[in-house]
Image (cartoon, rainbow, N blue to C red):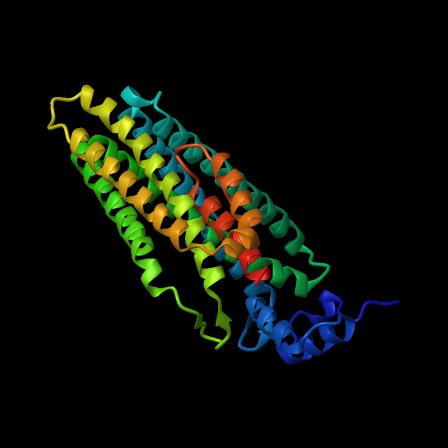
Length: 321
């Protein structure tokens, strides 16, 4: 069958006319096609000049994340130099390895964008499908902007890590903030039994006490990992302080962590005291599964992955209601 959206015939035609021809040859939404074709049109007309102008602009957009990746690479080099004296600690080694892996993946994404742009420019010289040219321009632009955003975010994260390494007092302050957050979480569990009555969610569906208790138990088990993660980071801070003549906040932080352990123990006892025998039986499989998953986590913890596990097991609790 002869194509009815032949580029030579459609070039220079009004956008609406091109939309009609493209939709006739594809199972596509006219409004979607119209929005995409605006990428290669000027004054409501699809033109060669508009294609060239968009490709020139796209080249600049794709070049931006390439530059940002170079900036991020320099930031990682600076962070490695700052962390050299404690590079053998689990916390620092893991963070640097994670940064390197993320940067490598980002570099590969940006390199692929450049390759796709080169291919697109070549194809656009004698386009066999104007709609696809416009669609790929739009797609490449969006992906390049995403890559730029990710590069900037990674660079910021690396720079903050470096600043923390270079300033032990700031590092200690951040650990105190982490401890404050964990303490608040444990206090919530200590107060939890007083609020344990059947309630309803935003959809006015009943949430039974059994489910709420099991959810609290999951959070209690996870708090142990929080405390252990802070202790691991504290080890790295202590080693850093050994290399510098600065005030030592380690004893105070260790003391707070010991207090958290005791507080968490009290919360665990309260949860055990209020639990009906049927609650443990109903949810034991999910709780035990979550504990096994927690045991697989090493410090420093991947908190995004841990949150995913928590939500997955919460879903299992909900399914068992």
